[in-house]
Image (cartoon, rainbow, N blue to C red; front, top):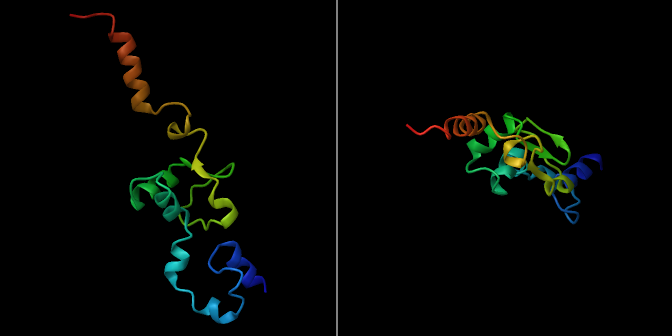
Length: 115
């Protein structure tokens, strides 16, 4: 019963599939579809699977209020709608990145003198 409840939480099975045979028939692909890396890509937060992995490892992605930096994080059904950019991330409205700050500083400092 505990195994079946866990499979329901991760949307690997639906509630009508209550036999152990359904659990034994699961494919590795079913588990790979529930990884954070795959879901970030499918929601359009990243341009590719590889980009999704980089964003997660660089702590730009949060699930709910928690910043997650593990691409293999298994996302539950109730957490799936809460995947978003981290509040501290430049993508999520945080402070701009290093290059953008550098360009803004050079524009404000060098914008006054035209030679």
